[in-house]
View 1 (spheres, helix red, strand yellow):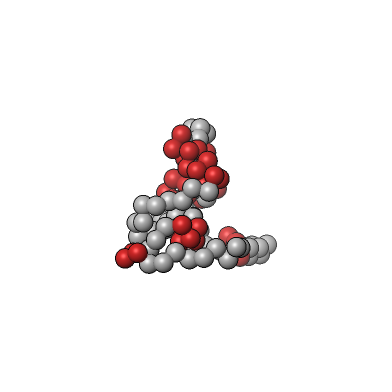
View 2: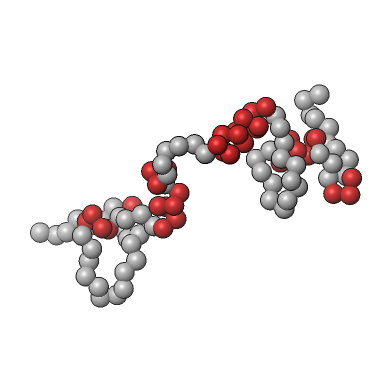
Length: 97
């Protein structure tokens, strides 16, 4: 009997292994990669951290992040309307006004 070809989704194994090593059991074949384990919601205790909760409330109120570091947050466009840029660059006008 001829073996059925693998579906395109299963063509490449995500689990690295050395050439000539013994094939893994089916349960071990699809283990999560390190970054997938770190980002998985099941790896947390399920509680919302107070700082994250406060940040969400601040954004809902319309507060802006004024730290002006090199990496803008989610409110970068809003910040441009309310906080002067480097060297006192003029504030952008709100297009809705």
